[in-house]
Image 1 (cartoon, helix red, strand yellow):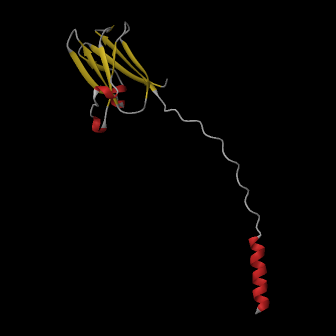
Image 2: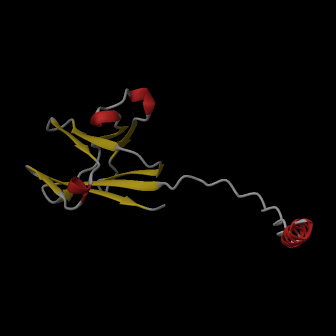
Image 3: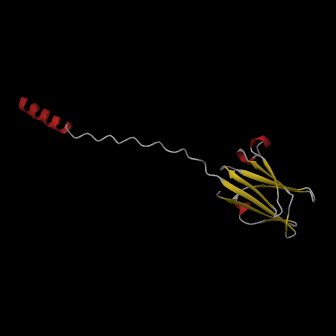
Length: 135
C-alpha cells in the first residue's frame, strides 16, 4: 500500500512540474479615443434660388424626442449667400433643426432622422436639403 501511495505521490509531483506560462509583457497605454463627430449642412432654396439670411437653429433632442432647453446645445446660424448653414464637430446624438424665414413667416422644425435626410423637403416655394458628413 505504501508503494502505491509513493507512486501516486511521485506521479502527482511530476504533473505539478508543468512549465509555468510566461507572463505577458505589459501593454502600452491606449491613446484616448476621441468621439467621432459629424458635420451638418442645411441648404435652403426659395423659388429655385438660394435663400440667404434665414435663421436656422440646431438643438439637441432629449429622451422621447423632446427639445432640450436652449442652454443645452442650441446653436443659431444664418444661411449664407448660397443658402447654406453649417455646424462642424457635432457629437453623436439626437438633433433637430428649426428653419425660420422672417420675410414670409415660415417656421419649420425637423428632427434629423434618416426619413428627413433621404430626400429634399419641399414646403411651398422652399426646398430644404439636410446632410450629415464626416469631418
